[in-house]
Image (cartoon, rainbow, N blue to C red; front, top):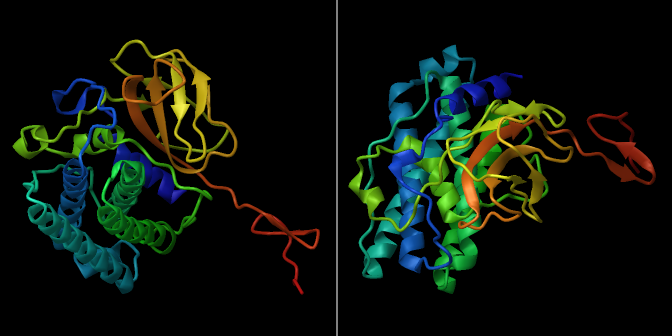
Length: 314
């Protein structure tokens, strides 16, 4: 599928075996303050806002048309860009109002070589952003900040849904529940895009885990995948699932079969035990886009859906 090849191309440049930014694994626990969390969110919003601005300036309406996309696709992406810029302005203002110093943007490098890969990377970034807001929600003490974060989360989800369906012609909702990651895990995903010399990032109380590279960045359930890292001590491979992670005994270099029921943008973490707490994580996350299969629903004992016969339902 086109989306699988584009996702592979987009992630390929970031699947390096190194600790992003030269940072060591740490145990962050639950010690982040609301200001820390807002600055963490602002870091991601700066990245997204810069990403959209850079490539909308680079790729014109004619470029989108040459790539086979109708004119309205670029218009909608421009709307997303405006949203991300607004998120940056809002979080910056909120931090200053709280007496905290907001982080500034850094220099970034994105694996974009065409309009197609631009949209594929956009799907990746929006998915990571969703997992970040959702994962940080439980640590936000202020109900007001939690509401603000929820408001942004819902819009990021709409972005991801639209990009997957209208722009990339993929399922807008490959899973019934959204996966989430800890701040350190999300930072590990974002770090390869960020200039390691950025002083703003060094000020954040976050650390990136050593990288975990997957032999495939797009796959189907049942496919075999291997994972590789320079880190040692990993014995357990975790698939991050919203209603309960899945854990498998794993030795680096072994072939791992992606189980049934795993779909969409999926995160894999190598751990020292059946836990993805920061003190147990050895490397990761690795991101694999797993093709979704249409879920069938039974109406009056008649199964209907994309993979089955179509019936008129009274």
